[in-house]
Amino acid sequence: MGLLDEFMAGLEGFEWDAGNSEKNWLRHEVRQTEAEQALLNRPLVLAVALKHVVKEARFQAFGRTDAARQLAVVFTVRSNRVRVISARPLSRAERRVYAQAEARPEADS
Image (tube, rainbow, N blue to C red; front, side, top):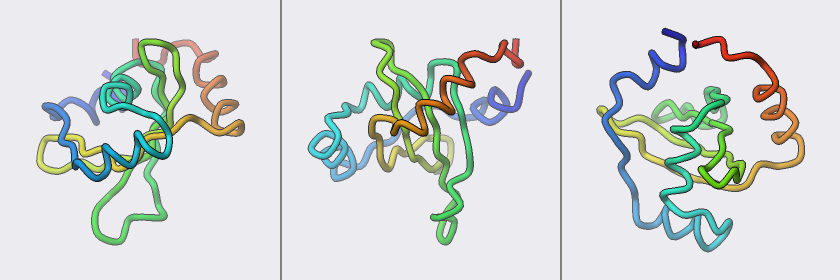
């Protein structure tokens, strides 16, 4: 079992805030299901979002939807649920990082 699998192991689902969901759609045209898919599909690039560690740990992930749309998703974990804070398309620099992750052989297999 890899680190990513261990991180996700105790999580049971998603929790959505209506304001964040609406913001993601209005600003970036990202639906809830797309953000969830980006976190569930592999490869997933995961990092701690150090900028926002003040109140609770936040994480940033680069992933792709079932339709191959590449997204950056910022989220936190509350109890055993993933709470998505923001989701948007990857920037050019982020797409390069994600392409490198896609090119690597699966370390978790």
